[in-house]
Length: 175
Ligand code: HEC
Figure 1 (cartoon, rainbow, N blue to C red):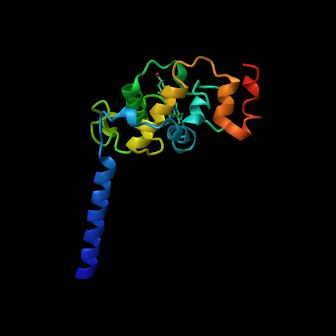
Figure 2 (cartoon, protein in one colour):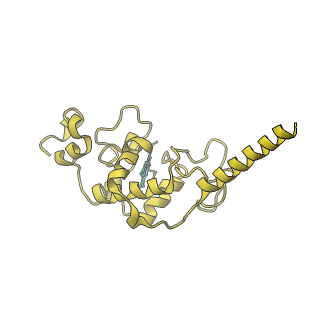
Figure 3 (cartoon, helix red, strand yellow):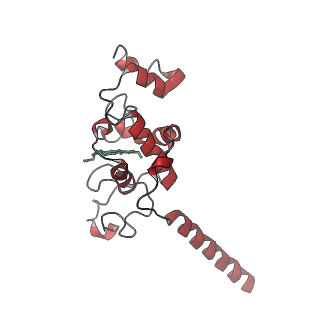
């Protein structure tokens, strides 16, 4: 009995320590540490940003047909690194833009709001959970390849898709 109890306590403690580790939260990370190439993987596969924003981040180009919403044109965003970070971790309540820090809206770290502040069914949408470093890499990617780049062109598309560019880049051929 005691053994079981002790085991249960160890588990609780381990879970608590794990929670503490993931919720370690830095409101202003060092954005110079971001690796744009790692960030590309976050955009494509970990965060699924591509589903709503398209490969080019313009909210349309070659959007995944499974996507549920049309995202904003990130290429025209006026947000700086901090602004992007806040949007990625907190989402945009009242829209389809999901939040990616699993602790958002559990305490007041996003806009001073918690889930209880939203009407039933109007709560912020939860996206894939990301670590701070992944968000910082993602921001480096967005800043290097999207913001201020104008309309997407073929060269960029080939860079994005590599060897499998033929089909997804057909609509920007000659651009
Ligand atoms: C389910 C669809 C969806 C997914 C997935 C999604 N977004 Fe969005 N995103 C949106 C929509 C819709 C908006 C516009 C919200 C509004 O302002 O009404 C938006 C807005 C944004 C903006 C704000 C642009 C600006 O300047 O106002 C940024 C930045 C952004 N998304 C980045 C991302 C990134 C990075 C990811 C991946 C981690 C991502 N989004 C995943 C739908 C999505």
